[in-house]
Amino acid sequence: MSVAIHLPDGLPAPSERRLAVRVTPDALRRIRARHPWVYDGSIESVNHDDGAPGDLGVVFDRKRRFAAIGLWDPNSPIRLRMLHVGDPETIDGDWFTERIAAAAARRRILIDRHVGSGRALHGPGYRAVNGESDGLPGLVVDRYADVAVVKLYSEVWFAHLRSIVAAVVSTTASTGVVLRLARNLAERDTHGLADGDVVAGEVPDGPVLFSEGDLTFEADVRRGQKTGHFLDQRANRLQVGRIAGGRRVLDVFASTGGFTVHAAAGGADSVHAIEMSAPTVDAARRNLELNAHVPEVARCRVTFATEDAFDALGSLGRSGRRFDLVVVDPPSFARRASEIGAARAAYAKLTKLAIAVIEDGGVLVQASCSSRVTTGDFFETVTTAAAEHGAELEEIRRTGHDVDHPVTFAEGEYLKAGFWRVDPRRRDRGG
Image 1 (tube, one colour):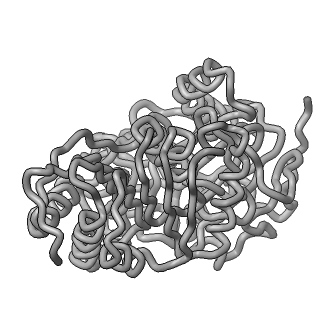
Image 2: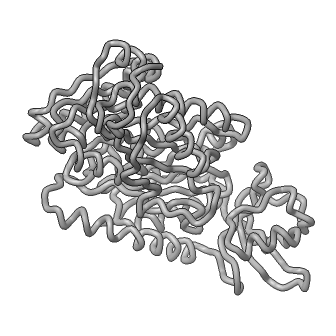
Image 3: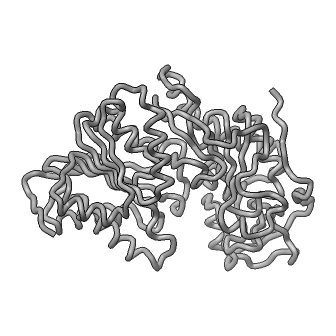
């Protein structure tokens, strides 16, 4: 089936000009080690002062030999976003198609697993392109059933958007493509495009239904957070579903109900979900209703509280209410280096509040999506906070990025989560 592409005539076209870029020796070493970014302070010279976003910048070594090529980003501290290192290559529409096809092929295991279950009602949701880690820095492609969402985090991609959209259509067989723009882009010249525009095929105005495991969820691909759903926690949600049987579950920062629905479908006796945003709670209720035909979901007692997570946890602790499984999945607390200390303090407080409502022998699942808080620091923060509260945590497992969210450089590693059992030998309900 032919899918029409809808992009404005005013979209910039790729320039035929190539910028000759010289970088510091340290930056060249990092480029050759496959780091995707070159910062402005590492640029020694460029042969044109008027390079536009998306121009191709060729990095030469000290002997004036080709070293790498990337996308010039003059309005960002990340001045060059690397595409290719090694022998010269032609960067054009065919090149982008091959790169996107290779990224999508690496996710084939997810599709095969989905088809193999035989019980899912819709196509799967997964990340087809994970930006820098798939060699396309500042570009994300998520797919929900037959709809693809292209999200841009840098204006370098406007000049290449026709090639990107065409490549997404041809490599993912999507019937519709939605464009999402990072907040910083929406405030600049978007060349006649707006966040949520349908740029290829047809996409319903309402939510798109997709499957995660054997369950159905909705994604608001045109107006929702990120690209419509938080796909990165899929593996942890499935694991919670596997261990939820017969348990009383507390889902903190429940968002659109991913952990809640999986816990209910996994046979939880009850789930209490806490989420501060009323519209998000409404979405969680709809996701629960989408799975009401599942017997375990129908039997599970699910309640929602539209409250601040810290306040709600404190109230539950003071009331004496206890749970067998507590999931704490907060938003990022550290978007800049100066916030790392406050972020660790917030994680510690959440751990102590969660420990106070977990039964002896119960399970704590706590996650962080703050890239500036390292995995080591996060796990130390959680275990130290638990010890200060008089609880000993037995680590069951620790997880990171799922298979469709590969990480190839340190700054790209943001997601970490731990599963701990609260040791019943040491317990203090105080504090």
